[in-house]
Image (cartoon, rainbow, N blue to C red):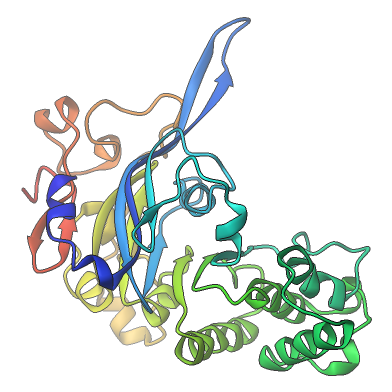
Length: 330
């Protein structure tokens, strides 16, 4: 992972840097025996100010845990998280909650059904004491509602009265209430209809441009990630296996897992789709409780050799800003 750190841009350009982050969950596997489930295992990356870094991978690969660990909603097992040139490990996170926020995946589960829209959006403002009078609080909430496309008449309504897309807009307004610089978007459109997905993604892009936001955008839909992200990281079984610019990753995927993921994207043109060769994965995803030795992808990789079982490949740069962890590519 050292080479990734050596090729990082100037520190003033970086808002968030993650170094060798690990998050293990102890799981009881016997009467007294416990085994570590390695949800995130030695992940390093940085995000520039105003940039969107997309994270993709199969369900269970550790994407959501990574996003939560970055915000210390899940306390990392080890590693370092540096926000705006300051390590946040071991620090009281209250001062950072106004600078780092999250938009959750499920708009139905992430909103308190007993609270009105105004209370949901205003809760963080109450905690951070971001207003002087009740009228100022009301004006800020109405401004945020307008910003995300919600009518002011919804001010005193409850979450059950809204559609999924409207609820996600409430969640985005809640995240924006404390004027953060960085937002983790944890699959923010996966539970929504396709037409609503486009509206939410376009709104996130507009908010990024007008408010100077930086995103860690987690998703399993590769088309959406390509659209919104400047760079994309690919995760497999808790590891970051490839990291590159969005266009570069789609044009020239190096890791066999990335190649397989991209080959599975549906193409609307039936003539092109018929000519394209689909790369099919072998076997099943190994259990993170008992991962393979060496490269985590080797049990499903058609190119795996002896070295793949013996040593974990390092994430190394192959060309300008394109990193891959694969013995075949090194």
